[in-house]
Image (cartoon, rainbow, N blue to C red; front, top):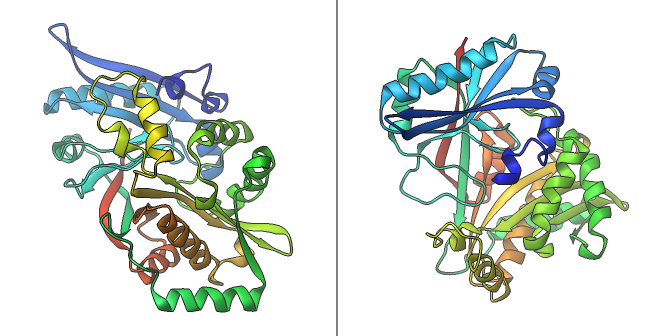
Length: 338
């Protein structure tokens, strides 16, 4: 979090700026928010959207109103005409307000908030811009086999198209990151709200993930030796972090690596799954899901979260439903004209 907020360390600030606000009452901090201007977003979508993120508030409408107005004023001063969020800092980071699915804990890199936040934002005049759907599949108690139809289908696709799937090559980690860079922005460029990641942002993210990545859970799809798609799944590190009440890094970091080594974490999150445009709709996504499902199961990871997925992305949503995954959380991005 410190690196994320740091203007010196986070490459987001090479194309964006932000200001951080605290709400105080009687010497006590009662809320926080960040106001965000993302030049790359507005260049990509040809609009003038400002963002708010890192939003936290007491259950007090006056506090929420003051925080949101501070963010809106800061964005307005920069010529922006819409306030959107929460996004901390963009759709490439934690984003969305949890509006359904409060009864289960958040997975790695997913936000969580009290139920009353929904009313705070809506009473402040924010309206729904887009819902983000999150799916779950499998079971934390036992391994659920891949549906037979999926297993047969992926084998037929492999034979017909000549697609191969392989794990991430950790011995050539930097080279693998470069290959992923080549297809990442092409795979997501048409999505609503998508902001292309710069090379420095991808490098920064890869550096953070490297110590905990499991190669078998990062499938790379190739056609004639050329990368055409990939998926990234990580063990749900929150299973370990959730037990840390001290806020200190040590000895929690040692417990984390021990949990990974001894395969004590039985939950995973599929962060990304992307395919270059010319190979979409051919079942490559099913091959990647099949790989993640089976390889995760071999490591004792029996439950998975996939998402988020835009509510109006029929291909991705249908693909997950065919995998017997079901929506169990909904996040929402809000807009307000400013």
